Image 1 (cartoon, rainbow, N blue to C red):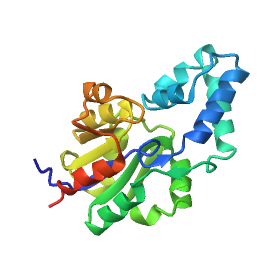
Image 2 (tube, rainbow, N blue to C red):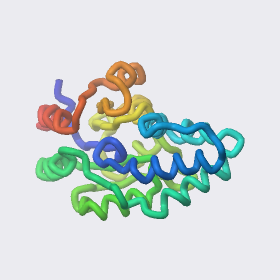
Image 3 (cartoon, rainbow, N blue to C red):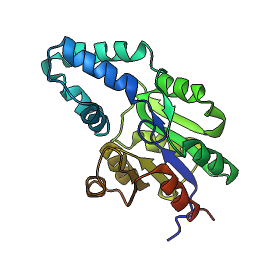
Image 4 (cartoon, one colour):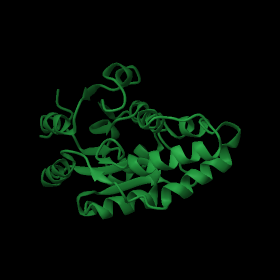
Length: 215
């Protein structure tokens, strides 16, 4: 079935980039400083994939202070360890060649997302970046997807939302975008239970499928 794809919406962390090194480092240090239970890197990845509320709940009664400390630690060097995921740049270049607009829809802070994408040299390949700003709801709320579609002047029902998290797929359902999940942190079953219409193990597999959706 062809979606007559008008635009591609992409999550960042775990979808097109591996930016978990500073996230994991900052989270583990914050948990240690506040004498909270330790978490593995995979557990932290899974919490990030469930949305901001899941992350903040880890801090319990220390939520405000620990959140600020986490942000401080993360921002000390959030470009270190940043790596493009396999197939990401090829996907972005192909979408540009095919004249399919691409938006980055992330729960990462707006300026952090812009800085990281600039660091990778990808700004010219991306139409719109919609990150976290004060007063802007994050996934699983569909607000950021709606803002991206408005900026690109496309119908959300003719978009594909690709992400590796539960929050990505829930947001896609609520926005009526076609949700495609990557099974790096969550299983095929977990992603489909929250609305993913297709799942793939790798981004190159997503890219191959997307080519069938472009007329």
